[in-house]
Length: 457
Image 1: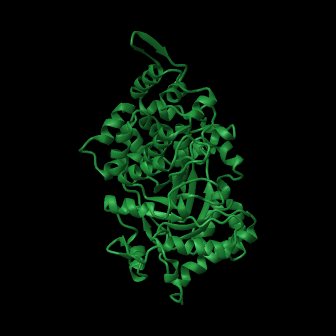
Image 2: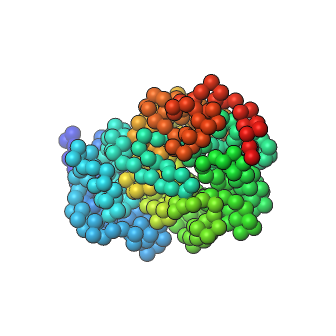
Image 3: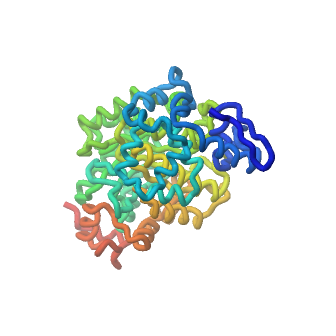
C-alpha cells in the first residue's frame, strides 16, 4: 500500500491509512478541531490521490476502530457477504467510484456490491467524489422499507412531521400535528422529540399520537424519540408505537456515551416485532450526525465522515425503516458553515444509500452557525433531486423545543411540485379524501387544520 505521492513538485507522506483517510476528507471544522485535517488544499488533493489507489482489501484490513475492541466494527465485518467482498476486494477506491458512476452500472448491481462493502470503503469512495457525483450516484439507488406504509419508492419524497412542544403539552402537540397534516406532511412518520424523557411521559405522548393516527385513519407511522430504554419501558407498560428510536454513533464507545449497547437495540427490535403497532418488517428508526463521536471522545483519531459511515454500517444490521442524519444540529464546532453543511448532507445521504439503508435527512442548522434558511433549502432541493427518502417538517421552519431551524411544512410540497415528486401513495389518497391534495398538489384548503373538525370517528 503506497502512502506517499508527489504533487506540484512536493512529496507528500502519510503516516498510515487512517492519516490518508483523515486528510482526504473535505474541509470540516470538526476534523480541524480534532487536529487531523489536511493542513493545506494541496495536501488534501495529495491524500485523495493516494486514497484513490488504495485497494478495498486494505480498507477491510484496517478498520477505523480495531475489530477486537469494538462491536460496531465486528457487526460491520461479520455482516458482510464474503462472496461479494472476494469478488471486489482487489478493486481500488478509484475503480469503485468509476464503477458506481458508470452508465452501465444498474441499481441492482450497486445494491448487490453494497453487501460486500465495509463502512471504511463507503467513506473512502465518498471522499473522492464531487457533490454532483454524490447526487448522480444516489439518484441511481432507491432503498425502500415498510412499517405500515412503504417509504423510499422512486418518484416519492416523504416527510417526518415533527410536532415538538416546549412542555410536552399533549393538546399543543396534537394541534401542531394537525397543522402539519393539513399541509400534507407526515407520510413518513409523525415523530415527537420529548422534553421529558421519563417512561410515563413518553407513554402518554406515544398513546396521544397513536390515538390521532387511528382517529383519522392516517396511513403513517408514529414514534416518540426518547431514549431507547425509556421507550422500551413505556411499551412494556402498554404504550402504543409503530417504531423504536435511538441516536447512534460509529463506535461502541460513542454508543455507550449515548447510554446503550447492541443488546439494548436488540431488545427494542424484538419488542417491536412482538407488540409494536407497525406491521413491519422494518420497525427501527435511527438518527446520526457528523461529529457526535468527537464530542464524546469516541472517534479514535478518525475523521467524522468515516465515523458517520460506520453509523450506517451499524444500522443496517437492524433492518431500519428510517435513518436520517441531523446534518447541522451539533453546530459550527463540527460543520462551520453552509458549504460544509451542504457537503455533509450529500455525503451522509450517499453513504447511507450505498450501505443499503433507507436514508433521509434533517436539513438543519443552529443559530450560531454560518448558514441560513436559503442554504438549507438548497440542500433540501439537492437531496430531493438525489432521491432522498424524506425530510423533516416543522412549523415555520423553527423548532420551539430543540431551538434549531429545519424545513417548514411548506418546503417539501414546493420541492415535490418542482421535481414532480409525490407523497407515499396511501397517504396521498388519504390527503385527497381529506381535501388537502388533488393530483399530488395542495388544494386551497391546505394549511387549515379545521378541516379535521368533525371528521374523526
